[in-house]
Length: 341
Image 1 (tube, rainbow, N blue to C red):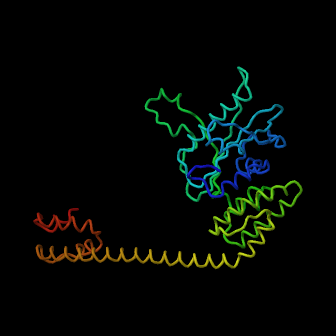
Image 2: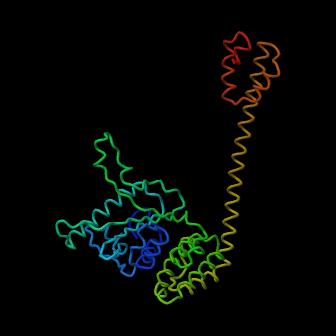
Image 3: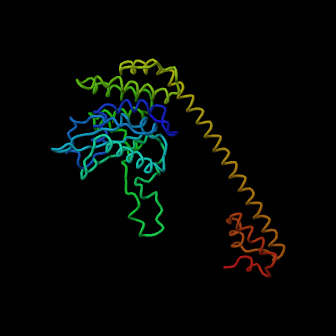
């Protein structure tokens, strides 16, 4: 969907999905859930074609900005939907840039009369990565304020973050009519059998009148997902969910064997790493024991037999403490000066 280095290989599939008003509606109703959701007339939801002056913005958003009627009047609601596969700490700054250019486009082409206000913009970031999102959700958190008087000049602009990894596995069961929930659930399927089960649920939902034209968009998204998920570029271009299900059935044996092999290799790698750590820990413990024995020998040679308490303290002490006691022997006149209370 973009030239950004963080974009996923199936961003184009996401862009195609979000060219359908039903998916945009599912995003708002099922994931964003604004308090004013009941004021939106989703029957009026339509894409807004902006003519940005930069190639980057034109390429990112021409199919991902929508407007909708709220209440009795035409109010403009623009959705800037970003698709990220890895954390972008400065996302708020990027969003501010996109919104500024979008507002310039509205002013230039509407045109707005003096005294009229610009429409509100709801920026949504759909994050599909597995890591924790660390970027601030408000632009103001990115700006340093050397003096309190400068606070009023700091931009106050937020975006709404939807993290796919926080969506519960039961989401598609809890919200059976939310197509986007089923699609995201497919991306987090544990195995091919689970994926086929979720696919059947989605296929039954989309068999209803009105949803059938979306099947091609969903199938194309799934095609790109499967190529990435199973690292299989030989997967053919699929155009409906029946073809996807048939392909999963055909590939089931091959992918099951692939998963088993990958699991075995991962287990072996983990075993080797544990062995390395255990070997390191054993080596450190042996070195500590030698240090303790050396310290006992020096102390008894200089001060005579030690008490059981001295023996216990030395045997339980870490290497760093043993080294400190060894240094004190050089200047100590009594054993008590080596072990001060």
